[in-house]
Image 1 (tube, helix red, strand yellow):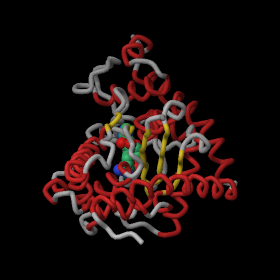
Image 2 (spheres, rainbow, N blue to C red; image 1 turned 180 degrees about the horizontal axis):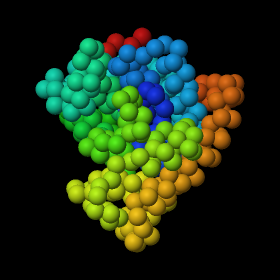
Image 3 (cartoon, rainbow, N blue to C red; image 1 turned 60 degrees about the vertical axis):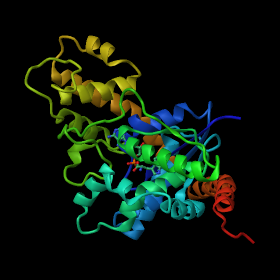
Image 4 (cartoon, rainbow, N blue to C red; image 1 turned 180 degrees about the vertical axis):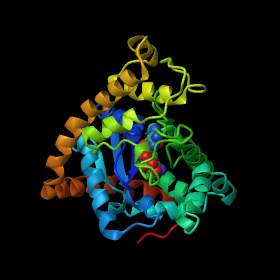
Amino acid sequence: MKKVIFSGVQSTGTLMIGNYIGAVKNWARMQDEYDCIYCVVDYHALTVRQEPAAFKENARSMFALLIAAGLDPDKNTLYFQSQVSAHAELAWILNCFTYAGELNRMTQYKEKSQRHADNINAGLYTYPVLMAADILLYQASLVPVGEDQKQHLELCRDVALRFNNIYGNVFTVPEAHIPQMGARIMSLQDTDKKMSKSETENPNNVIFLLDPPETIMKKCKRAVTDSDGLIKFDTANKPGISNLLTIYACLKDISTDECEKQFAGMGYGALKTAVGEAVCETVAPIKKKYDMLISDAAYLDEICIKNGNRAAKAAAETLDRVKAAVGINTF
Ligand code: TYM
């Protein structure tokens, strides 16, 4: 039997180059070797206030974009979280096995509470528990994510181990699979901040996969650098240049050392142009496929239903075991 992989992406906004490099590009590489389950986590996205019509459209768009970016819906179980109610049910049970002290330590909760000070809801607080439920429902061994999800994964493991210690081996204890390079793509204008698809302050901080080529080139050309003129990978002292080199290296599948050699003696302008071109080359076929998919509603519906049913079946098996373990009556 193949090992199970699970990962998810929130349907807030649209995919950007950080999601692609840190997560989706790697997901596409794993589809032959593993039993892969990838989920558009629309319930997670509700922790931030959403406008219903746009929210619905964003989720569909995200689904189409994942396929366009390389996830074959015949090889991967690709579905919406809201299609499988077991996610919410298991999350409730796991809430009872997670301590408030653990949730208080979550850095994403602290950051998001600051950003959405007018809406610090309970969903934002228990977000990591729903995430643990997502993963544990499918007995996933590996969870390919960017670096920002590491702490949530550690919590998921702690909760799984706690539950298993009480009830026996109900859950597979998953491991985070974080890429060595590109696990944290930084904002183009503010290199202290990670690039984020829900960026609202400055669109020049983030490159979206559906940005037109001229916008991509403009954003790359405006990326902050430094004044010493040397193309060198040094995240501590040259965060802007290192971020550009990382994007280039990940898209070209080369090391940052090779990158440095390739750009030796060249100026920052040349690097920015090369990065912009590499991004444009990567996103062009994705955009083409996306345009085709998004206009074919019947096809998208068909694969959502097929994959959602497949996911629901696998999830039900685990949920039944969990209910039996804790002593919930089933009729
Ligand atoms: P989300 O939607 O914020 O991001 C999706 C994936 O993209 C990665 N990522 C990045 N990688 C590199 N550089 C960046 N700047 C960058 N920004 C985002 C994320 O690490 C993620 O892998 N909580 C999750 C969604 C989720 C999930 C799950 C993931 C819900 N349930 C279960 C794994 C397993 C999130 O908000 O991802």
